[in-house]
Length: 174
Image 1 (cartoon, helix red, strand yellow):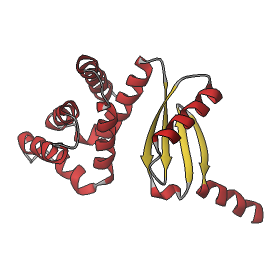
Image 2 (cartoon, rainbow, N blue to C red; image 1 turned 120 degrees about the horizontal axis):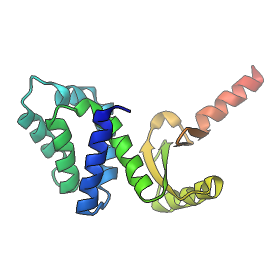
Image 3 (cartoon, rainbow, N blue to C red; image 1 turned 120 degrees about the vertical axis):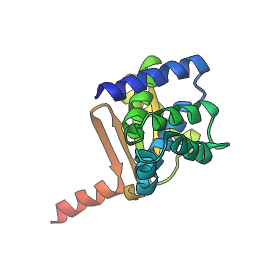
């Protein structure tokens, strides 16, 4: 990972520790994912011809009242410094750092639908049993999954999606 991404992730972790992380890392991750998925927003926030104050105001307009002040300030800082294109990588490094600081592993889960708190808790318990580590579960809604979930913990991918099961059936019939 680059020094810029690691540097921002470490600095933002320090901010979260000082402010008492009340889910700001998750909000940061979700905003970064939204920016990554929206070409126009990503382009606007990354455009060096647009003054930093204008790009920061866009962030504040988008997040105002929808995210914590800490999240808004962290995103605004990164965007104002000209690193909006790095938001997804910074967010991923940040949530990994938060999990590691708590002695936990990070499980990135892609699901076709949002999971309930109960489903997340059961998934975390199952992953703990499988890995032997406490696990922070971060869910991203991804309609391409079709059904089921795809979980990534470090370098390990557990693909329990309908798409992969259909591909397995197709290969057996092939």
